Amino acid sequence: MDTSPNCAICNAPAYPECPCESERLQIAVKQAETRAMESRMVEIRDWVISHARTHILNAFERLTSARKNAHSAYLSSLPFYSVYMQYSGHPPLHPAALAQLQSQISEAHAELKRGIDADWRASVLRYPEVLDYFYSLVEIRLPSERSPQVAEPPFAVAGYADRGYERSGIGKEIKKKSRRDRDSATPAPGAGRPRRVEDLTYPVVGRSRAPPMVPTPPIPVQPGYQYPPGGAYFGY
Image 1 (cartoon, rainbow, N blue to C red):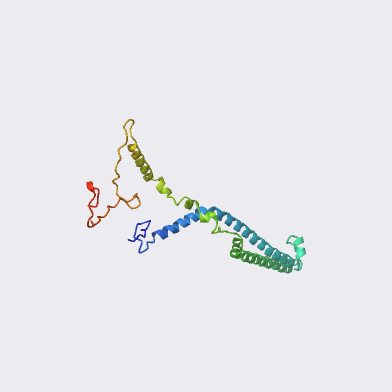
Image 2: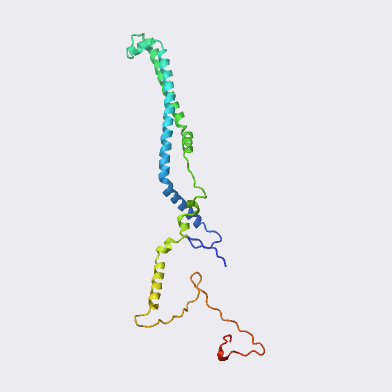
């Protein structure tokens, strides 16, 4: 007899293997991960993003600060730039000199803007590296295999009791039946000794009590042996 259980989902035979249980197990694992890890993952994610963003912004500020300092130094080195700033962009200069100075200032500003864009792009593109680093600092510790919580979880200590079965009406029906049996076996007041009720039930797999007695096989009669009087021998 093949004792391999059928599929718990669709009741298909054990061989060939049915994919139902594997698929349902994957769904159950994802649901368990969501229940156990969602709040922790949100906390970890917020912590990692906060530190990564701070690092990226700090790196960008350092790059742009150096670039802005170089830009200011370049403008200060231009001829008539101090006069240009003193008169708020309208210095008393020859039109050709003023046009040349304005062109140099415009080119310097455009170069600064291109440099700032490049610095920001370089900083943002480092997010994968920075995120990996801060995620690597998070410690996820698995319990020891010798831990009592792992070796003897609550459902193992309880003997793997089927709580779903206990909540069903089957157990209650059995209790009611056993109570009725006890009530029927209890004598009424003044009724004397209760009559013994024969147990005529036959054994069923998983539910039987002690098996019925097997009759004693007949014993051959030896020469010179006499049967006991009164039919006391039950072999025949």
